[in-house]
Image (cartoon, rainbow, N blue to C red; front, top):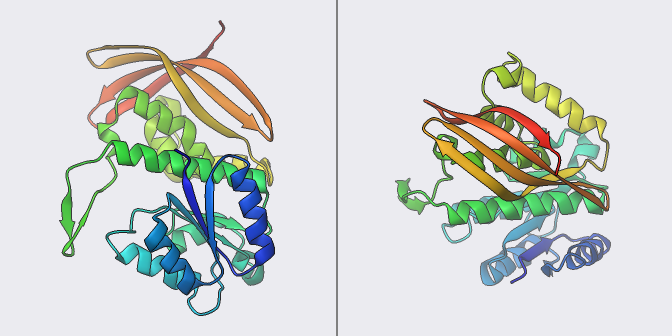
Length: 265
């Protein structure tokens, strides 16, 4: 079944661009033109992802996000903010706005439709992963929630997937956490994240996307593991695949990657 995506934006041209882009990948798309209508749409359609503008009539995007996060029935729907607020305020860092708004991702207008698709695909894969690996339900402030699985409980293949796909959403702190100390090059987390952000920025408006396609072979013996995976890299519309072999060691903080090499078929 195709993923369902809701678009809430008062600019009809943006909505049409998003509809065409998302439908080209087979997604089901529904749209609303203001925040109040958007709240009704999300609560009735229960989309797999919401793309939300901030500045809208009746109810702002910020208020829409707040209400959805407070509602146990909608709090787990990923929210991608699509806004020109960075251009208007001079604060253009998408990471700055994502963290400040407390949403799953932030994309600045004007935007590259292909790059946006990469962000969408990452959020949908992450949602699917979290949904299929739930932890026991816990109570928080009187409401039930399902927290994301702790990385220390990931299997070797889950660590590799996290490491590879962290790039797509600029989750470089997660990427750092997947690596053993020698693999980090003695870099502290903030230094590592800074360098990776710089590398991401250098790719410009259309950074490549990468994902783990499949596990070809896996061997785990005691506290060591060797996993051969097929990975895919997407550069604009061109996709390439290769096999990589990862070695991992179990630590007190979970599995960590100790080495990786390309395997030629």
